[in-house]
Image 1 (tube, helix red, strand yellow):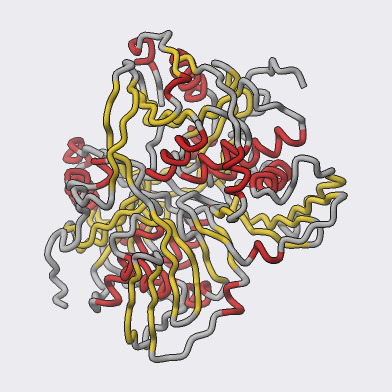
Image 2 (image 1 turned 135 degrees about the horizontal axis):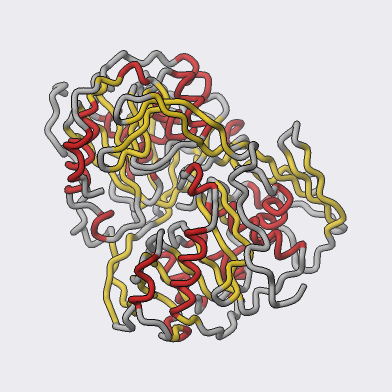
Length: 283
Length: 283
């Protein structure tokens, strides 16, 4: 796939009737009002014959979520040949099949719950590949932060339609490419990982823009995917910052309007924009 | 304990040096700036000799978190006598001991990851006690929503000091009583459950005010604790709404400034305030 990818190649479809539900309630003025809320369903991810995890997800991209989760957990190796992906809507399950015989029984016993949402688990040996990460020295022009923030905020989304959802966007320079949303921000980043894996998208020249907090798990997933820059409107946790510094990941948080703060990998920052251009950010 | 409890009997201590860390970065104007980020640590919860779960938590109330989590998972029964709670800071573990011999080996195999943060797990048979719930018909005066929102927004907190944290507040009428914060909003509600269990606090006349989304798990925990009203600044998920309606829980979301919408249990609402009183909400 070309390194110059189409803007919003993948983007939310707030009009998809499977993703939101209309419900009627009473508003602050005592008036009956109808509104839309986001739907989440359980999805059980299997790797070959083994049940790995059950996630709550909006569920519009089960194949990307399953492949991305397994890849980010190192259960799917870079050289693994995926021989099939079967989605069973009735059983609310997705089965990823590989040529290699897999068995993760021992690892399924040892999970660490994280502050992340949804599939909030990290398997111990994920850290090994994290240690080995070597992120490219791509620059981050500060104008990109403002442009991306505005483009993403204006884009129709489940967030604008129903709220209570996280978004993660794979970007190339100042251009949003893959915009995924889910009840759990980790589902969103895993879906991007799955898309990249299945469509052979390189992390070179890419960066992440997320609505979620910059936690240890977001940092680990981003580094594992080889993406050198992670930007969020939200804040940081101390472990997120220290892991980002350890891996040389550029971590930019509290990106709202003209403001942001970078707490790791600040050497990538190139100040090419006056903060005043950003006051129009609708976020 | 008296039913009339002191306002902010428990409240965040943003000055506690163990809870935040000062880090230096570069801001949007290219200036070096120091800021504070919230610290999260792993905490492994044991019930007697059995390891139950490892949560990422701010960790200031490990005893409440452990007892509340176990109670909300039905692993600690209402009639269980707690014979001891040992906190081992070095091992980052907390052990809850009961007179009854416990064994949850079979249940630890069957976890469902939810859209909740941190200890985002629900054990299947938690739903049984959910079905059996019978919530009191307490009224919810709309003036309470505005008063609580303003009092909580003004209260010094880790949220104001460092961000990237969720808060949950047990309230009595328009008075915030227990204000707990954690990286995971479910930790915050579990800490409240633990405090209530250890201090014999009745859910009668109480309500919850949370900063987090109104997901299935928040609804399940609230109903299990016997609290009939759950209010949030944030939004809803469809499963949160349908579970709340099933249990007769009053669910009020998107409570910002003068606005809110109730999507379940609207019969408890008493409109005693003009929305205009609320414009001062700093949230």
